[in-house]
Length: 105
Image (tube, rainbow, N blue to C red; front, top):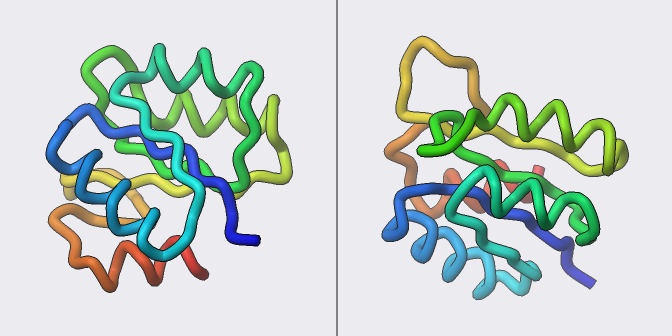
């Protein structure tokens, strides 16, 4: 069975694009467009991978990573950003292959 991904991105176009690509690869994707929505899911939902944007309209992806370590310590956490000053697993803009490679590794 493929892994469950919690995808958090406040750019709706990118959220839909990533969700589509990951679903096509048979991942089970829960897509959230805000930090608040993601936090609500994280409190009770199950996921194997957290893939979150760093800069969210209502919060910071780094805070989601920290919370994820508390509620789902076995889950992998991946950060994506377009901000060159931040360390991230995935730098925007990214290709389809880069997204799939980072998630699969």
